[in-house]
Image (cartoon, rainbow, N blue to C red; front, side, top):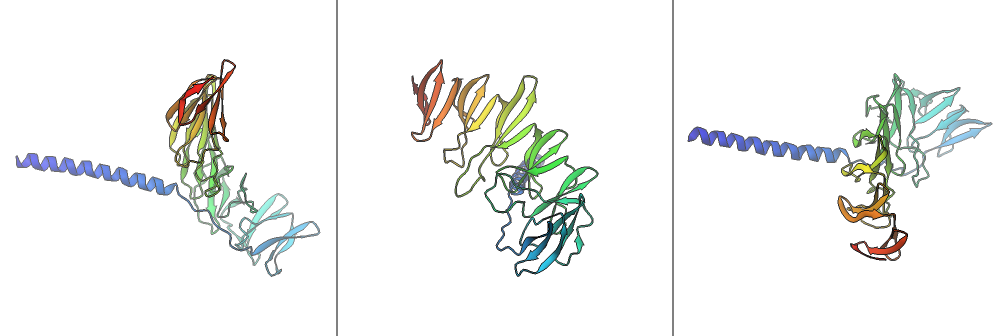
Length: 304
């Protein structure tokens, strides 16, 4: 009896340990997907142009980099960090015109896309190249990722997230180098969901894979969790519905449209088209060249 009791106790401890480790893993994973976008509180440096040559001045008007370059980029105007270009080569200089980050080659800023900002580049990370592969570093030269990517580019609409490519597949990492979307897709796009308070923070991802029948689309939420497998011929989010926790998705299978609320199918795939009327908060559906409406909360009740 005593041996049986001890054995049972050991099993219970092992089970509890496994549960705890899964919980810790999930916590670490969630923490890895959070990131903070750097803020620029003041502009300390500006590009100077003289006789079609470029340099840098500080906010007092002092020349800190002589205007002798074909182009100069300032990724973060708060930092003394200037990428200077001459005859198809580039180097990184500080305020003393000393070359820095010489341990890396092809250090480049990452240009933002479709971001409402007067700044052009990611403010805390840069790319570098080694043996034809790309990685991330910060402005102090600390390596964030090894040079393992074929390409690194900004993800439109989502500052702080980067589109990366490996072996003809794409995914998304954040500026900490952690994966937001697995590198397993043909294409990754932001779904366009926007709020004044959070901007595109709660926007999800529309992903695609290539099959023998053509491209198929799936959906991941803003945390990168798969909501819909890539088995649809078309997916779009109803971005007019202000709901950070739920994505209302118009999905097509074989030319027939339906509506999902996350994984929940609200409207069967039996319509030729579905449009959302924001003014009346109704779905306008088309079937056999006839039109009707459906209440989104009672989507099965439609009239023609």
